[in-house]
Length: 257
Image (cartoon, rainbow, N blue to C red):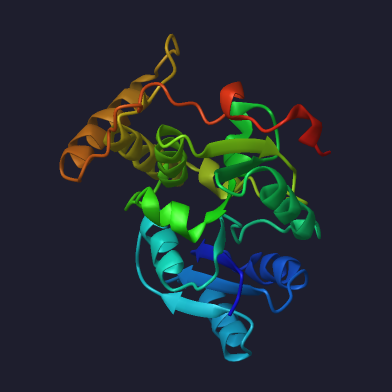
């Protein structure tokens, strides 16, 4: 029986998936399992994952799915009491996972803990590792079928139950800023997905007072149509919850550089 399940979703990270996984695997002992849901990668990375699965290093599942559904599938096929999620395969990680787990057990064992790399909410996409007990994650409903904001939605529901905390503990060695997403078509596609999922969650798409370009308005119109065809998850705290609210922060003494 394992105590910790590292639940990972993946799609098309052939350049980093092996180094990323080994930066995690090299830190683990028999208390851990690694569950990877590959959303039908097309760039050759699925072959890397299958080899690691054949070697018994990971438990691999393959299913075309959203990020949120993938996280939920990984949860449902894992066995540990504690779930560690959002160690994504486009980054590599420092050998400090044991320290982070000690912080969780010492200060947030009955909570869902968000672990960021920075105090700034604008930096939240760069690291949003989530740790919580299987029982708590199931109690608040797990991850929903979203391609963006699925983690924010889980944190929001944990906060509603009085079970959310966050802390700063940089674990990523090098950030992958995905320069390919700056090309026109990938950028527009990413905007559409983000806008649509934020609408489904009842979140404001643009900060108050932000200047919105004509192109953004066009994508927003399409996103509204797309959102109307999917299930919505607005929630009563949708417009108020901030994952970096100081109310939810662990003690300042836990700051780690």
